[in-house]
Amino acid sequence: MEPTTDGEPDAAPSTAEETPTGRRSDAAHEPGTGTRTRTGADVDTSTPTTGGTDTGTDTGPKPPAGPGSPAGPGPAPGARPGDGRRSAPRGRRALRRARRAALALVLVLVLPLLAAETALRVNYAGDPAGGTYTRGQDAIWLGHAWVDGRKNDADVTALAERLHGTGIRDLYVHAGPLEDDGTLPRSAYSRAGWLTAAVHRALPGVRVQAWLGDRLATETPHGMRLERARTRAAVVTSTREVLAAGFDGAHFDLEPLHSGDRDYLGLLDDLHEVTRAHGVPLSVAAHQIDPLPAFHSLWGTLTNHPKWWSQAYFGQVARRVDQIAVMSYDTMQPLESLYGGYVAEQTSLALEVTPPSTDLLMGLPFYHENRFGHRARAETVPAAVRGVRLGLSRTDAYRARFGVALYVDFAATEADWTAYRRDWVRL
Image (tube, rainbow, N blue to C red):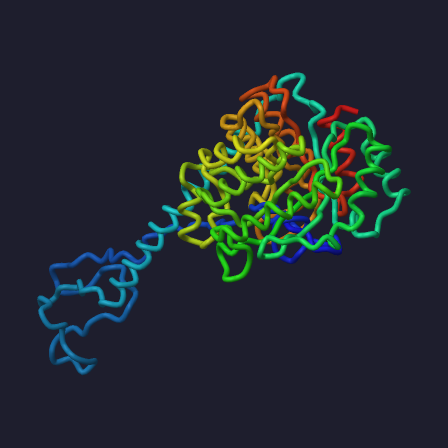
């Protein structure tokens, strides 16, 4: 999700602090359909008689008794005298074929969906393992207001009080968005030095990372083009500049980023050299993982928006960074139980391919919107935390480098904070 510079979310998910563009959410978070059955009322059940009288159940007009009847023409061509059966009109046969084809299509689409949703509900059952709570590795995305002059010392003091006693160690502060050519004007983060110094005083040990993002030109003609070497080089230069301004790390959210993008992997390799030289982490916001094998390919064919990454590609990204945060919201799930089951699955899939040396964080929805892909009543903090704990319990209950990431500070409610503290921090 890419936020705008005024801290308000964009209308559509982008790559920083708006709605989770991915956040973000991708996501979400969707299709549903019903079926209808044929009653058999359109099947001809008439029975021919031997006396030439039609005693069938057909309620339509009857043929005249004989060729000389004044009621109309005689029997249909080719019909035997006294036979009450008639050939179904071509239109009726075509309609029947169309109905059967429609029913088959509905079954093909609906049955797999029902099976998948049932599996998610089952995935939400059971009890999380004891001890599956915060490890002090959590993070929160913060809006652009923290570096453009709208926040002051009193706001930092209030933030410190809010975060005291929680597991939050990283602040992803929106310092972009990057320009489409990869550059970033320093005026966009003019108060970065003040913020990092103030946070270090009020929250010792908490890191302030520069949240950098942009919309990619993967599905529209406009946006950043990672295939251009000059653009990637500019992104690296912009990263050096924000680190020189005092940030404690660089966090990237580029969307929509399609699974298998080799240019992105190359960019991460170059960025990691820069962050290592400064002794700070390289962090990324990651798309969700295919809930079914190769599902991103099918969805991309149908919508031109693949949305998910393959599990293998997620692993390739995770091995190139110090920290990876899954945007596990905007999931298109209509119920809390289904959303929680989905988060449990995502947690397990991510744990399976994230190396122990990389921090893995699962996103929590600290925002409340109702739009395609996201239902606020379904994507709740309690459901997400329970899903995270279930996935962690089943896959790697004792993993140390694991946490949750809260999206986003300016949209959070007291209920969100209460659920995070109660269910994950255990306060």
